[in-house]
Structure formats: structure tokens, C-alpha cells
Image 1 (tube, rainbow, N blue to C red):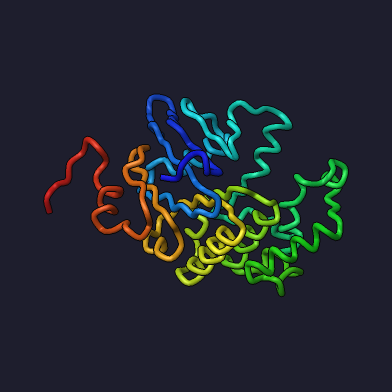
Image 2: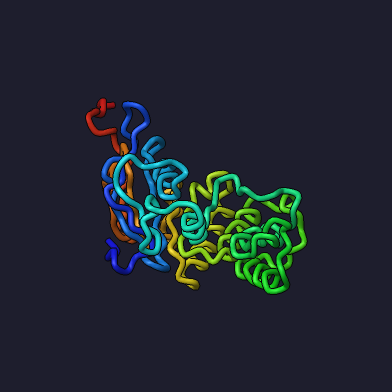
Length: 259
């Protein structure tokens, strides 16, 4: 596990319930700059709830989340907005403005850095435009800067989302099932671009995945969630068949029926 003192993200004892159902239980881990972590587990394991608690889209019932050493639960107003600026989000459905160009979508990642009046009018300056173009080039889409987002393929749209997070100057990127709707070749390309950006810029990446076969060559580390608990945390290179069975096996308290 990454030492907390060197981490961008620290999650400690995180727990959350929906009514009487416990969705997360005592989840703890830390992620270092440039480290790529794949979070895996069966449907209902708590992956999306974990991401929502990290960003405070929902409030955890217990535990803490620190980004860059700042406890997000203790922040309010402007301080919370500034802290969230350090967190880039990439979603399964791209979350782009479909009628905007690729460049325009990447520039959205700069709005939080602009004076209020410029952000309100969405009028970035030449420096921001140059930065956005550079970010598109880094994910292999420089020639598509003027293309409308809805004219791009799914894989290209997801690369635009990565470029947007890069333009945001995020210290941490949370990617929730970012390649679930892509074909295998496009998925591998998107993950390769995300991993390269992370390591080249020292960005911590936490990415939930259903396709465990994509972990090799992408992630440095795997965290396995099962029934809301961390049941595996180790190097991606050692995540083998036995470990997969520990993560994807029967829910605790149940038993397999012999075939």
C-alpha cells in the first residue's frame, strides 16, 4: 500500500449505508502521484458508491477522504470548490457537451481556473486555448480539435474527457467504468492514453473496471471490492486467477452449489 505521507488520495475507514444495507465497510487505501489503480469487483460491490463518497456527491457515514492532505468533509464553500478542482472525473457516458467541439469541451476543464466573469461568459484566453490544444495532442486528438463531440467515435470522446481532466490540472482522476461501452480495441486505446497521461504528469488515477483482462499493461495496482469490503490490494502483476476468485467469488455468508 502507498504510504499516506506520499499520497494524493487517502481513504481511511470509509463506510456508507443505504437504509439498512451496508454498501461500504471500513474501506482504506492511499494512492501516490502517477500511480494507476484499478478498482474491480462484481456488480453491487460498492465501486460507484466509493467514487461518489470520494467526491462528496454523497456523504460517507464514517471515515475520511483526503485529497492533497485536505479532509474534504471539513471543507465548505470556496475551499471545497478549490479542492474539487484537483479531482478530474471521467464517466462511462463521456459527459461531453455534444454540440461543442473537442477543443471547446477540453476548455471546460479550465473554467474553474478563470476569473468569475470569464468563467460565466465561457471566454477563455489564448493561453487556455493553447493549453487545451496541447492536451488534445497528448491524447492523440490534435487533428480533431474543431470536430463536434457528437461526430467523434466513443473512444475518441473518452480521450477528449481525458484531455479535459488534464487541462483541469487535476492531481487525481476518478474514472468510473470509462470503457464499459467501448469495443475491446477502443477500450485498450483509451486506457493506454489514460495511463500515459497519469505517469507523464504525476496524476493519481483510480479507475473502476469490469473487464479484468484490461488490467495488464494499464494498472500498477489492483483493489478488489467484494460486498463493500476491500478483499484484495496489491500489484497488478500478481493479480492472478486465485485472487480473481477471491474478489468475484460468492458473497460472504453464501455458499456455492456444486455443479
